[in-house]
Image (tube, rainbow, N blue to C red; front, side, top):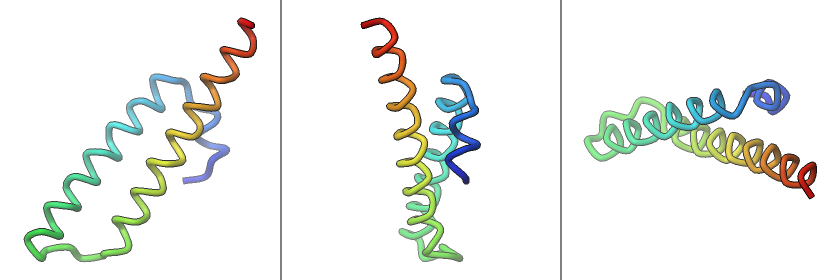
Length: 69
């Protein structure tokens, strides 16, 4: 997922995206535990997507704090 796409989303959309990614991460962990994981690279990809979403959320929060200050 491209960061530019994430920056265009609202806070609620980002929260929903984060929730979905966390759910997918949990499912991948279960698959790994039961040796059913088709693509081990997917774990790393999801983890990085979570980090991107959190980064954009923090950027938006800091912008709001800067405007209020």
